[in-house]
Length: 199
Image (spheres, one colour):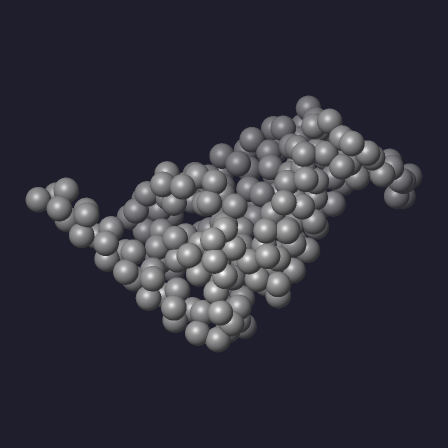
Protein backbone atom coordinates (compact mmCIF):
# COMPACT_ATOMS: atom_id res chain seq x y z
CA UNK A 1 0.00 0.00 0.00
CA UNK A 2 1.31 3.47 -0.88
CA UNK A 3 2.26 6.06 1.67
CA UNK A 4 0.81 9.54 1.93
CA UNK A 5 2.15 13.06 1.74
CA UNK A 6 5.87 13.62 1.47
CA UNK A 7 6.54 9.86 1.35
CA UNK A 8 3.93 9.01 -1.28
CA UNK A 9 6.15 7.02 -3.65
CA UNK A 10 3.38 6.54 -6.21
CA UNK A 11 2.82 10.30 -6.45
CA UNK A 12 6.54 11.11 -6.74
CA UNK A 13 7.21 8.34 -9.24
CA UNK A 14 4.19 9.26 -11.37
CA UNK A 15 5.22 12.93 -11.42
CA UNK A 16 8.74 12.12 -12.52
CA UNK A 17 7.67 9.30 -14.82
CA UNK A 18 5.32 11.57 -16.76
CA UNK A 19 8.39 13.50 -17.91
CA UNK A 20 10.39 10.36 -18.67
CA UNK A 21 8.31 7.95 -20.74
CA UNK A 22 10.60 7.70 -23.76
CA UNK A 23 12.97 4.68 -23.40
CA UNK A 24 15.98 6.54 -24.85
CA UNK A 25 15.45 9.51 -22.54
CA UNK A 26 15.12 7.13 -19.59
CA UNK A 27 18.37 5.37 -20.62
CA UNK A 28 20.17 8.72 -20.88
CA UNK A 29 19.02 9.61 -17.37
CA UNK A 30 20.11 6.22 -16.03
CA UNK A 31 23.66 6.96 -17.15
CA UNK A 32 23.81 10.66 -16.26
CA UNK A 33 21.76 11.28 -13.09
CA UNK A 34 24.02 9.57 -10.56
CA UNK A 35 27.19 11.29 -11.87
CA UNK A 36 25.44 14.62 -11.22
CA UNK A 37 24.82 13.64 -7.60
CA UNK A 38 28.34 12.24 -7.27
CA UNK A 39 30.05 15.39 -8.57
CA UNK A 40 27.78 17.60 -6.45
CA UNK A 41 28.93 15.72 -3.36
CA UNK A 42 32.50 15.91 -4.69
CA UNK A 43 32.57 19.72 -4.82
CA UNK A 44 30.82 19.90 -1.44
CA UNK A 45 33.81 18.07 0.03
CA UNK A 46 35.52 21.45 0.12
CA UNK A 47 32.87 23.04 2.36
CA UNK A 48 33.49 23.49 6.12
CA UNK A 49 33.25 20.26 8.11
CA UNK A 50 32.06 19.47 11.61
CA UNK A 51 34.54 16.62 12.02
CA UNK A 52 37.18 14.85 9.93
CA UNK A 53 38.19 11.20 9.93
CA UNK A 54 41.78 11.23 8.71
CA UNK A 55 43.77 8.16 7.70
CA UNK A 56 46.48 7.00 5.31
CA UNK A 57 46.30 4.37 2.57
CA UNK A 58 49.42 3.26 0.68
CA UNK A 59 51.25 6.32 1.93
CA UNK A 60 48.56 8.77 0.83
CA UNK A 61 46.58 10.88 3.31
CA UNK A 62 42.79 10.99 3.06
CA UNK A 63 39.95 12.51 5.07
CA UNK A 64 36.27 11.69 5.35
CA UNK A 65 34.68 14.99 6.29
CA UNK A 66 31.30 15.49 7.96
CA UNK A 67 30.53 18.45 5.70
CA UNK A 68 27.68 19.57 3.42
CA UNK A 69 28.41 16.68 1.06
CA UNK A 70 27.97 14.20 3.90
CA UNK A 71 24.73 15.80 5.09
CA UNK A 72 23.37 15.90 1.53
CA UNK A 73 24.08 12.17 1.16
CA UNK A 74 22.41 11.47 4.53
CA UNK A 75 19.28 13.50 3.67
CA UNK A 76 18.90 11.70 0.34
CA UNK A 77 19.54 8.34 2.02
CA UNK A 78 16.97 8.82 4.77
CA UNK A 79 14.35 10.08 2.31
CA UNK A 80 14.84 7.11 -0.02
CA UNK A 81 14.60 4.58 2.82
CA UNK A 82 11.37 6.24 3.97
CA UNK A 83 9.97 5.98 0.43
CA UNK A 84 10.76 2.27 0.13
CA UNK A 85 12.84 0.33 2.69
CA UNK A 86 14.24 -2.21 0.21
CA UNK A 87 15.17 -0.14 -2.84
CA UNK A 88 15.71 2.84 -0.55
CA UNK A 89 18.38 0.95 1.39
CA UNK A 90 20.22 0.23 -1.85
CA UNK A 91 19.88 3.88 -2.86
CA UNK A 92 21.13 4.95 0.59
CA UNK A 93 24.14 2.66 0.23
CA UNK A 94 24.91 4.21 -3.18
CA UNK A 95 24.54 7.74 -1.75
CA UNK A 96 26.99 7.02 1.05
CA UNK A 97 29.30 5.26 -1.39
CA UNK A 98 29.24 8.45 -3.48
CA UNK A 99 30.26 10.41 -0.39
CA UNK A 100 33.16 8.07 0.44
CA UNK A 101 34.38 7.76 -3.16
CA UNK A 102 34.09 11.50 -3.79
CA UNK A 103 36.07 12.17 -0.61
CA UNK A 104 38.93 10.00 -1.88
CA UNK A 105 38.77 11.64 -5.30
CA UNK A 106 38.64 15.14 -3.82
CA UNK A 107 41.67 14.40 -1.68
CA UNK A 108 43.53 13.12 -4.73
CA UNK A 109 42.56 15.97 -7.07
CA UNK A 110 42.60 18.94 -4.71
CA UNK A 111 40.24 21.87 -5.11
CA UNK A 112 42.07 23.51 -8.05
CA UNK A 113 41.46 20.45 -10.26
CA UNK A 114 38.30 19.07 -8.64
CA UNK A 115 36.11 22.06 -9.48
CA UNK A 116 37.13 21.80 -13.14
CA UNK A 117 36.26 18.10 -13.22
CA UNK A 118 32.93 18.84 -11.54
CA UNK A 119 32.15 21.68 -13.94
CA UNK A 120 32.82 19.56 -17.04
CA UNK A 121 30.87 16.59 -15.66
CA UNK A 122 27.90 18.75 -14.71
CA UNK A 123 27.81 20.47 -18.12
CA UNK A 124 28.05 17.16 -20.00
CA UNK A 125 25.44 15.39 -17.85
CA UNK A 126 22.92 18.25 -17.84
CA UNK A 127 23.38 18.80 -21.59
CA UNK A 128 22.79 15.12 -22.23
CA UNK A 129 19.59 15.18 -20.22
CA UNK A 130 18.27 18.29 -21.97
CA UNK A 131 19.01 16.60 -25.30
CA UNK A 132 17.10 13.56 -24.06
CA UNK A 133 14.08 15.73 -23.31
CA UNK A 134 14.25 17.92 -26.39
CA UNK A 135 15.05 15.28 -29.00
CA UNK A 136 13.45 12.11 -27.64
CA UNK A 137 10.91 12.99 -24.93
CA UNK A 138 9.82 16.21 -26.64
CA UNK A 139 8.81 17.60 -23.27
CA UNK A 140 10.51 20.06 -20.93
CA UNK A 141 12.33 18.52 -17.93
CA UNK A 142 10.44 17.96 -14.67
CA UNK A 143 12.71 20.43 -12.89
CA UNK A 144 11.03 23.31 -14.72
CA UNK A 145 7.75 22.46 -12.95
CA UNK A 146 9.09 21.30 -9.59
CA UNK A 147 12.83 21.83 -9.14
CA UNK A 148 13.20 20.34 -5.66
CA UNK A 149 11.11 17.25 -6.32
CA UNK A 150 12.85 16.58 -9.62
CA UNK A 151 16.37 16.91 -8.18
CA UNK A 152 15.62 14.76 -5.14
CA UNK A 153 13.64 12.06 -6.96
CA UNK A 154 15.88 11.71 -10.02
CA UNK A 155 18.51 9.33 -8.55
CA UNK A 156 15.84 7.14 -6.93
CA UNK A 157 13.67 7.17 -10.05
CA UNK A 158 16.42 5.84 -12.31
CA UNK A 159 17.39 3.24 -9.72
CA UNK A 160 13.79 2.00 -9.47
CA UNK A 161 13.58 1.97 -13.27
CA UNK A 162 16.71 -0.18 -13.45
CA UNK A 163 15.49 -2.55 -10.72
CA UNK A 164 12.13 -2.89 -12.45
CA UNK A 165 13.58 -3.39 -15.94
CA UNK A 166 16.31 -5.86 -14.99
CA UNK A 167 14.88 -7.61 -11.91
CA UNK A 168 11.11 -6.94 -12.17
CA UNK A 169 11.22 -5.29 -8.77
CA UNK A 170 8.17 -3.60 -7.27
CA UNK A 171 8.03 -1.83 -3.90
CA UNK A 172 4.74 -3.70 -3.40
CA UNK A 173 2.44 -5.76 -5.66
CA UNK A 174 0.61 -3.64 -8.20
CA UNK A 175 2.85 -0.60 -7.75
CA UNK A 176 3.92 -0.27 -11.38
CA UNK A 177 0.41 -0.82 -12.74
CA UNK A 178 -0.96 1.94 -10.50
CA UNK A 179 1.89 4.31 -11.32
CA UNK A 180 1.69 3.63 -15.04
CA UNK A 181 -2.01 4.51 -15.02
CA UNK A 182 -1.21 7.81 -13.27
CA UNK A 183 1.62 8.52 -15.69
CA UNK A 184 -0.60 7.92 -18.71
CA UNK A 185 -3.31 10.15 -17.22
CA UNK A 186 -0.77 12.93 -16.56
CA UNK A 187 0.66 12.66 -20.08
CA UNK A 188 -2.86 12.75 -21.49
CA UNK A 189 -3.63 15.96 -19.57
CA UNK A 190 -0.38 17.53 -20.75
CA UNK A 191 -1.10 16.62 -24.38
CA UNK A 192 -4.59 18.11 -24.11
CA UNK A 193 -3.20 21.37 -22.74
CA UNK A 194 -0.54 21.41 -25.45
CA UNK A 195 -3.18 20.86 -28.14
CA UNK A 196 -5.34 23.71 -26.79
CA UNK A 197 -2.35 26.06 -26.90
CA UNK A 198 -1.71 25.13 -30.54
CA UNK A 199 -5.35 25.70 -31.45
